[in-house]
Amino acid sequence: MVQNLSDLEIIGLIIKGQKKQFTVLVNRYQQTAYKLALVVLQHKYDAEDAVSEAFIKVYTALPGCRKETNFKSWFLKITYNCCLDILRKRKRLQSSAGLEETIERSSGENILQDMVDREHKEALWQSLNELNYEERAAIILKYYHEASYQEIAETLKWPMGSVASRLSRARDKLRTRMKGGKADG
Image 1 (cartoon, rainbow, N blue to C red):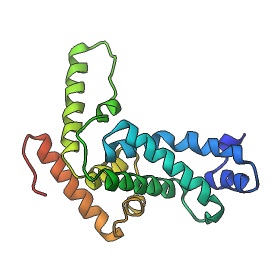
Image 2 (cartoon, rainbow, N blue to C red):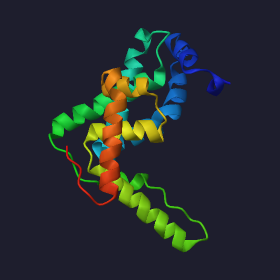
Image 3 (cartoon, one colour):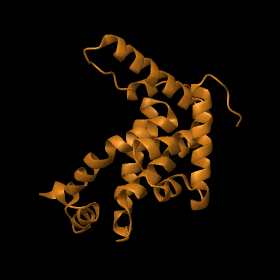
Image 4 (cartoon, rainbow, N blue to C red):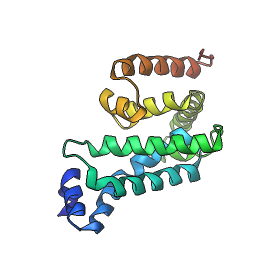
């Protein structure tokens, strides 16, 4: 079954002419890329455009994909770069439109706890929106997608040695904002 193959094995099939196998990679990484793009761009349609553009770029670049490439990191880096292209084109960050879509609504039996959980998530997203797009992306990559420091460095084009300190500063800013304060920077 093709779904059980590794990314590089699927890429090999695609390069050998089985173009339809690209849908397996799309199914694997579409949601991850969309969530990253939504956090960076803060707009549903822009995020969809960035992900579509990233898949097109990846598809055309597959023949040059090296065997040692971590496809997920490579794809997220391309997605992030597509987001930056959109940000450059629009020349301004938009407000939190679209981010609320990523907040999952629980439907448990304890309505009071559900309300508290929802308020906490909304406060978290609101505080996250106050960070710059690189800080938001780093936090989402690390804590939502469980990316390694290496993957974060590659995706955000940060020097490997600065990932931990930048992520720490972003966490500190987020923590300060969650407590109702304003963080410098």
